[in-house]
Image 1 (tube, rainbow, N blue to C red):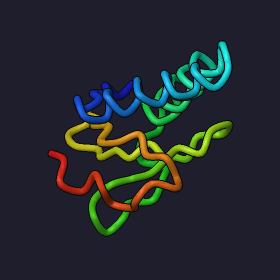
Image 2 (cartoon, rainbow, N blue to C red):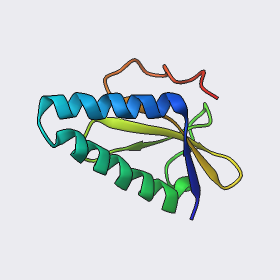
Image 3 (tube, helix red, strand yellow):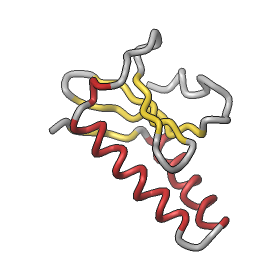
Image 4 (cartoon, one colour):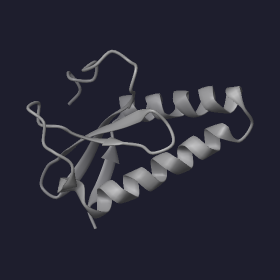
Length: 97
């Protein structure tokens, strides 16, 4: 199974989104987090399944929430660059290493 590392900026986005959803409705933030964890597991099991984009990233669309998991694969390792809301400015994460 592939190892996954979440960049600091992406982790901050994740916890902001968890707090946002939890504020909207009790338990919704934890449901969001569970969906992210399921999504990361799917990516971990088959990271090359989603198309490679011109910028070198791959994108996984979560099922219940409108979020993309933006990641790259390098040397059998997955690097999560962003947890991007689908309505947020596209490509804002492009300068992350």
